[in-house]
Image (cartoon, rainbow, N blue to C red; front, side, top):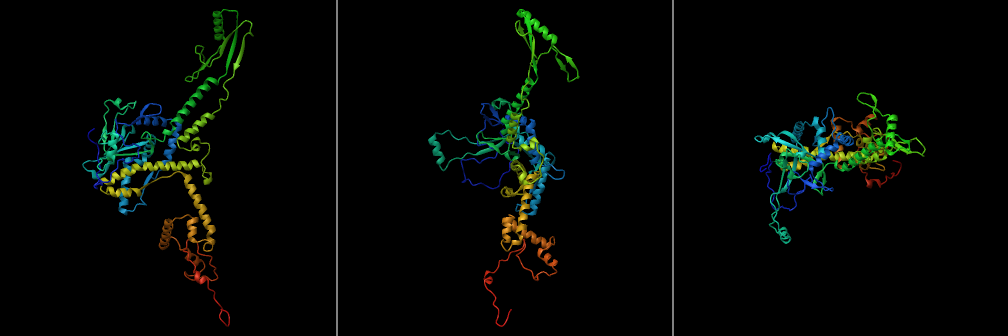
Length: 558
């Protein structure tokens, strides 16, 4: 483990050595600055059990096999990754990028190459499913070391349980006293720690205890940071310095639901059948003979019919006994003699209130609307007022997951462009802020909400149109009613003007004049102007001329 496997992309620019800080840069994966003692970070939970990230991943994968959890995960994945027959689940969006069309074409082509290497159009569901369950996704960027300018040759998936991101100081600080440490921190020539970052791949990470010492002869391979692409869930436990899956919040709820369901089954199996109590009169018989007489009566009158599900036969099996059989009790002389009574079965066996409570609690922990999983109501495509708030929250949650997942595409695209010398690291830092990824959207609730809002705004603008120029200005209608921003107004005006020049649309003023049989620019007779129409430029009136009146000349009328 002395050498790093993979490649590193060196920056040509030199960083200023005067800009220093004792605080290491924050990391998105939640791993703080620490010195690792093994291949995998570990912690002690509230129960005192030694655990590590490998055990967490195994726990999450076991949870994903539970029917309720699997249904929730599938709903989230299907919402985030929409697979269509014709369209790709994700496309690169470069409308906000200030670059030439040549650079944009290169970016689109390289992103398509990355999707082809991932086979994303076919395996997008599996890739996103693994990322959501394991909370972290690793890919090795395989290149030709002799021809790095050819870019990435292969993107190889790595199991999250076998990979760990390590971060520690290259040089250990001296064990100084308090006074000496304070003095060193305040000095100008302080030696700040140099952070070393790399990945450790352990092919046989199968020790269940999580104790690094128990790994024995485990062999790990160090990978350079640039040769591995990884993205995390974004859910971080700052107390333990580890990244968690969104399934972590549902561990307790799932365990409670399992125990409730198991106890419910046991209770119903033991309490559901009706049982009888046989009081047998044994007279003055001794104890041994009374017990023998009781057994003889039991074997004589007891019938135990057993149904064989394999053969479909019903047979009388008197050898087997169970806890659900009848009770046989002896009764001495002087009692009421032989008597048979019936014990009623369990009451209120149909009550599932507690089960429904814990099931709803599990759905809330999984961040999925309850209405989606229960299936009580149908899919409503009505007004936005009929849309549940849970659906809007779910839509925003899926949007955040997509943002986190897009980090993987950005890192792969960065490596591809730097290896092919398309851009420099400095240029990429500026470009990456304006590169977005457009996912196919299948959530109709947000679309319905936006459509209804736009419909209401257009109706208000139509009602206000006769009053434009009288009570309202055109600018007021566009800003306050239609809710257009300054950028939207400039953009739409330019597009309208260009489309009129190109003949795509007709000038509204010329169209109105053509209907009246007039030439453009001629005033209309007898027309009373109520102000400019919606979409036309407002001309402010001359207040100085409005204050003057025309006087009739002497000798007659005008």
